[in-house]
Image (cartoon, rainbow, N blue to C red; front, side, top):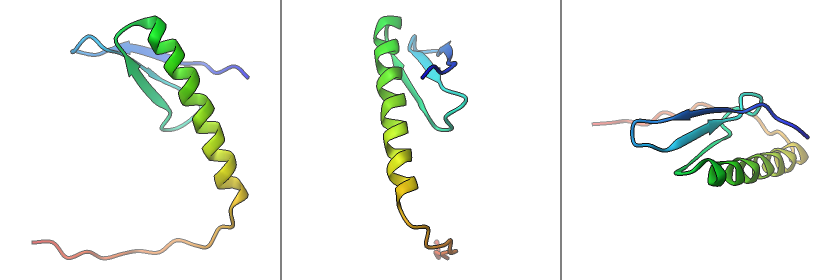
Length: 69
């Protein structure tokens, strides 16, 4: 499978990559070579987790109230 990625460089000098077609799939590294390795791993893990979640049974959504202060 092929995925388009977006690469940016942050203010600390890290390369940051996002995978727009996989919400929440992102990683960072100091070098582009390391970044490419990490993004492949991130995509593989994302797809593995997604598959496991899809195999589960949906129970429902609830609202939880938490008192603060």
